[in-house]
Amino acid sequence: MNNGVTLSATDFERQKNIQAAIYTAAIAGVLLLLVFLIKFYQPVAITPPQEEYIEINLGSSDVGSGNDQPQLPGEPAPAQQAAYTPTTAVPQATSEPSRDIEESADNEAPPVYKPTVTRTDAKKINEETKVERRPTTTANTTPTPAPP
Image 1 (spheres, rainbow, N blue to C red):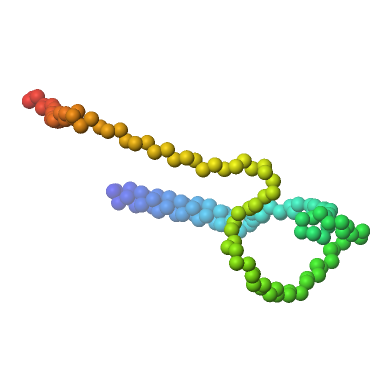
Image 2 (image 1 turned 180 degrees about the horizontal axis):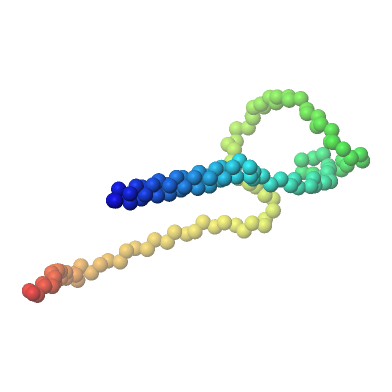
């Protein structure tokens, strides 16, 4: 009699495990199918519109203050490059030492006066008066704890 009850209990557990495995496999299969079928698209990048600029020629000098204005719009012509000519060093025949002093004919700057040095003599210390030094005592005042 016990044998019949245990047989049906093990059969029930087996059926339950098979049914759980089928449900698990079905859910995993559906998720795997969704992964392959659903595709996430990257959004299309919108390119900004091309901005239109106006080219302004301010002249031919590096500073931009020339009188050379082209009448026809378009690409500027390539600049002509001058050939390099090395300069020769000229020896200086002056015997006067060079100074880094800027001389001016204007009398706008005030004259610079050298300050006069005043010497103050040290006062004599009264030798009869002496400083008395007191001995410093350091009192060790650490509180002692009361016994419990």
